[in-house]
Length: 293
Image 1 (cartoon, rainbow, N blue to C red):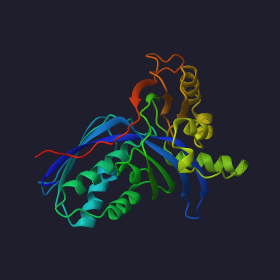
Image 2: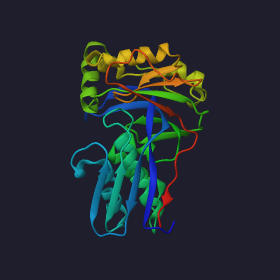
Image 3: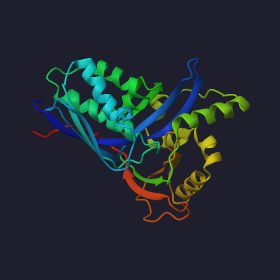
């Protein structure tokens, strides 16, 4: 692709299953998860015809640019590839911050995909995956074009799965986020009282149909997060009452999603005041990079 600028829809993810396994001596936790991409997306544009380094956003303030995952992704790519000599990133934010939908990770994954698509000498896929892993546990998945995948470890091990038929979703977006580090601390405190019983591993053949996923769906973060934010339980109950086949929290929260076999209702009674309800869909194909010149 011969271009100096490109754009990509940075599509959010949900965790249809999320298991927090052993805590390593270095403090990191081993994970096992079933990822799915959804059509809620930020728009990320990257231009490389500049010697400056710029990041602009339309949407909520997400803190210093040096801590922004999209900025860090561009700098990591530059250091690895020796290219580009500068960048201008613009992000139109639609994915809630701190909601468990991987918005910052999706932006970082989009930056890596854009830069590798327009680079004069693209990096090998394995090198891009390594850069993604260094940025966070969700980034390796959202730096691929897989709509479904199983993930293990700290996100570095992925198995892309065949996409399942698209399903309608309702997303309940509370007016607060959950800080992931705090949620892991709550998990650790809970397990000092209730030792972990390791579940049987998720297998590809167990999650190749929606009914199999419905049997295995779960999120280990739910119990400790609900203990501190009981409104999340009300969202789960409202989605189940509305006919959701699967109702779960995504990531460490605070977003709660419901998967429906049929068109979901236009209204969702019972959600707490201040909670937004958004319609979305799972994806069978992930957005592709589009050149701008």
